[in-house]
Image (cartoon, rainbow, N blue to C red; front, side):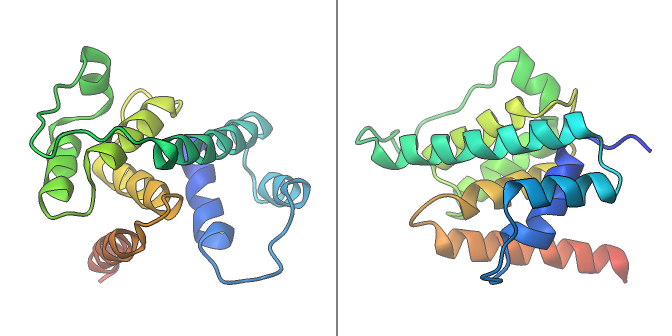
Length: 160
């Protein structure tokens, strides 16, 4: 079984990060738990680095007074287009149009996707990245709740 960073992140997010449990385990305990369930040590460390960089990005963005114009157009680089297929890019545009993402949070999502150790990200993985980014963005609680509904509705549709 080839587990990657996104698998570790999903496991952490589903089991620890997005819970109301006040007794959340520390990093060492989480690393031990992740190794116990079968995640490779290297991928665990990459996932923690990814999360640590997420909080830095969130703090940097929330402190910025410069905002992108509402009607700006996003052109993707060649590397971004390789990583994000047409469905992913279209979904990001949809999320902007319905108000879940603004230009700043879109850029954070793209930056976090590019920081993943993967050749290509599928739409379901990208939805989880969007959810994680919104979780760490102060003032985006409504957008997070909306995105959470989208992600979990999609999961229920697959299960049924």
